[in-house]
Amino acid sequence: MSTRHVNAALRALPDGARARVVNPAGRHNLAVGLSRAIRVRIAGPAGYYVGGLSAAADVDVDGPAGWGVGENLMSGTVRVRGAASQSAAASAHGGLVVVEGDASLRAGISLKGGRLAVAGDVGRYCAFLAQAGTILVGGDAGEALGDSLYEAVIYVAGRVRSLGTDARVEDLTEADVAAVRALAADAGFDHVDPQNVTRVASARSLYHFDTAQHAAY
Image (cartoon, rainbow, N blue to C red; front, top):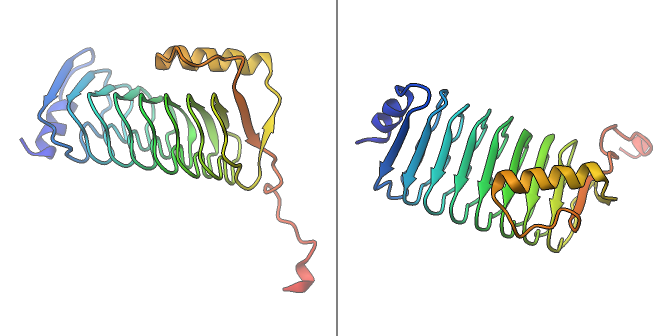
């Protein structure tokens, strides 16, 4: 079947239906644009944008995934049982994206309210320009974490290599502990101690244009 036919067949399923896509062979754009409460199991690795532009559906990938997994997700869940390439959960407005391995560069870029949980490490520029939502990193975070962050919050169980522009470490509150505990439970992570994570949020110094040196330009 072509990718177009696969997606058309999935979108035709009624609420509560289950489907299994066999031999995906790393194909791009699988299970995109879904709008019903169905469960889709992709039996093998997936390419770019798997589960993107979807709402209500639960998509499960038995293997790694390429760029943009769960891109612009509105609701539902996309789970990758392996590593994810760049820009996981990019611009996700809602729902949950789970990566059971590591995630590459720019995970959670421009996040707009969704949740991203990565069991392992994340690469550079995680949460770049993230506007809203929550990111949980079960391992280490690479350079420039939270660069140009807005209202999204990041929790890191491991080490933070460096913070990006306008990102800062903040004290952990009881509300944060509860939020981490809930997200770890939803993701199925049992290796994260909710009371022993680093909270990273915005310092908000980029919210307003600074004209202090306007005469120099």
